[in-house]
Structure formats: structure tokens, C-alpha cells
Image (cartoon, rainbow, N blue to C red; front, side, top):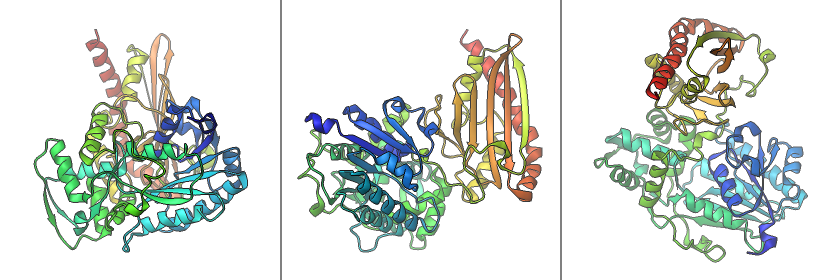
Length: 496
């Protein structure tokens, strides 16, 4: 390949998200020089590629930050999405794209590559219409925009796949809306990354819209049946009813699956349309099919399931931050940012090694749970989902290994000093901000473990909330620290 092409520098926005995180690795595998723009560089510290990229910490809505990020860039990937930002997300997305395009023109960027959604049906959702409008705004300057439009992306950790997986697993008999019969054109995440990567290696910039889809067109119901078959489940009974509106459907999906209602709503809205690639918008003339061909639906599902079972999920839909309530300040605010700081502090000395204690702490949440008081944790997760939060069902990316930025049930890893400290930030719906922090050190020849639940309330309502739930803390937190030590002792004995 031409050295001039390889030496191009690429900017990846949304690098802490599902597609962006994988794209960075894919580009680096081609020896392409990569720069990323992220709001918080701590979120990508755990990525294997973090030391191989240039990191610009900033906000894509800030012109100065965009100028720094786009300076000297040949190909800029626009992978930003704002569907969690409320009912006016379309206006926010349009403004962000417009600012990005203008900054790219000013910086002399040769090519913008944008991943949108297939929008060929006359009856398209607000979500798909916004994605199309974003492409229009990006193309509003002289910088050529190569827009790739995809339908459902099948891959371990994608929101669409998690929705499909959990609906199929948990509901052997289900009443579904009519949209499950609509045609879809799914594509494997592996093939999406192939097209994105090859877009950076084109000899000349391209300004055109292309639809990308896998080799099969089928209904969502057909995909569910294929998933059931590949998972060793019986055929699912699907009863279509006309009363489930998109709003009701998203509430139902938010309750049954790990995907929160706010994210399920645009996904469902997309399924109401016929999301099928237009052959007239084929990219084959510019980017040929991969030598091994595109993965069909069964192969895509099998690959995703294999990665999940092998604990090799590289990125997840939940890697992107959840938009907090309006009164919550930015993550990582200092203690004095709120009116007061309330704390539940526990500590213990033990003869168990610090390494064994750490193994238990790093494995917290997900399938392992929260070291006791399971019913109370389940209730708190259920309440959170009922009020529009993420609940406990997000689980973990990996059963034993955490990295900064990982989602962990309704927490997110904010700080991690392996073997010494783990700090989790609460992404549940709260009248304030909350953290759960563990610290391990050595004192007087013993392992010293501290556990702190920290809450920065918002006004009187936040303080009332803390005191209402304080009685439950007397069950949850002493049990937690006690069971961490107990399981560590048991694991230590089993290792001999």
C-alpha cells in the first residue's frame, strides 16, 4: 500500500463508545496514525491501545477543542451521538455536526467519514431522520463527506444485539408490536469496521452516501428465531398485537432487557421503518467486498456469542456515558461542589493478602453480585428502571477485569489503581451524586480495607433521600465488607 496513504493521520471521535473504541484498534492494526478526541481521557486508560494514540481531551461542542483535534488531520471520523440528551437531541446533533464541519474546513481536513443509519423508507423515525440530518450538516462545507448508512449492527456488546439477546432469552412466549415483521438489513460489526477502515485508505476523497448491509434481508422476528436456534432454545412463540406503540414498546424493552428506555426508544423507532439498503447506493465500486465475504446473520450471532462466552467483549453500548439528571454536576466534581457530603464509612483489618482482597473487589457486580443483601440491591435496581434509570441489568464487560470507564450495573468505574483503589460513580437516577469507593493498604503487617459510600445531595430533597435510605445501609454496607473478606479467605484456602 502507498506509504503516503499509510502516513495519513486520522481523528476518531467517540473513541470511548462502542464502534469508536473498536475502530481505533482496527486502524492501529493497519499502522495508521490515530488521534482521538474524548471528554475524559481516564475513560480510555484501560484500553490496550491507549498508549498508541494521541489523545486530545476536550468537548466536540467547543470550537477551540475541535481546532486542536482536527489540526493536521487527513481523515476525520464522526461517530458522535446525542440520543440520550432529551427530546431536542436532533437539534443538538445538527448543531454539533455543523460546528464539526466548519472546524474541519478551517483545519484543511481532506475527508470526513460518518456512520449513520439507513433511511430509505418514507416513514422514518425521528431518530433516523436526525441521523440523516447530521450527515447533511456535515456535508454543508467544502470538505467531502463519505457517509456510511447501516441498519442493525450485530456484535458482542452492541445495544441492538443486547436487545435481541435478552428478549429472546427471557421471553419464550411474547406479545410483540407489528414492527417485528418489518424488514431489516443487519450487518456484523466486523464488516462495519472493514468499511470504516477502508474509507481511510481511499486514494481520493469521496463525497457520497452509501448503504451497507449484510447478505441477508429478514424480519426482526426471523432474527429472534435464528438467535433462539443458535442458543439452543426452543422456537419462540411470537404473538403480534396492534396496541404496542413505540413508546410502550420502549418501556417494555427497558424493563425486560439491559437497554434503558431512553436508548430503546430510538432503536424501536428505527425498527418501525423498513431499514433495507438501497442497491443504488452500493459502495462496491469504491470499496470491494472483503475476500471472505460479508458475514450472514447466523455467523454474526455465533461470533458475538463466542466473544461473550470467552469474555472477549472489547467494547459495549454502555461504554458511552449515561446522561445524568439536570441537577447533577460533571463527574469527578470535588467534595465542595455540592452543599454537603454524606458518607457511610467501613473499615476492617485482615490477615488475608491484599492481592486476594483486590481480586474480590475487582470482581464485584454483574453475575457475582454485591456481596450480600441481594434482594435490596435488586429492589434498588428495579426502582431505578421504573423511574427511567439504567438499573442493574447492564452487568459487566468482563467477569474479573475492570478498566476506567467500564459500566458496572448502575455504576461506572471512575478511578482504578489496580490492587489499591476502586472508585465507582453512580449512574442511577438520584437527587444528587453518589460514589462507592474501596481502598486497600498495609498497616501493622495486616491488610487494611476501607469502604466508603459517598453522597453529595442536591438540596433538601437529596438530604431527605439519604436519611430515608440510611436504615438500609446498616444492612447493605456492613454485609458487603464482611463478605468481601470472607470470600477472600475462602478463595485463599482453595488456592492452598
